[in-house]
Image (cartoon, rainbow, N blue to C red):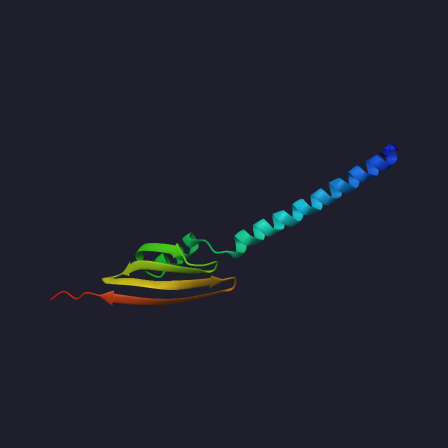
Length: 99
């Protein structure tokens, strides 16, 4: 066992530095993951801004979502892929005409 107070203080400082570094790395990874992975609410807001109503969004993967909604008299369903920097979507809408 080491009894020298200078060596013990140096080891304690090194442990503290390592723990601080690990904490920073974990924090950056968590914040980065939250910023990269889109939330369903942002997809829902974008669909509502495009004129959809009664929007229901479900996560289908890390970057992909499926949705059902109404647009005017049409019932629509589709998918949205939202990657950092780009978004793509496809939809299929059907309308029942009244006579």
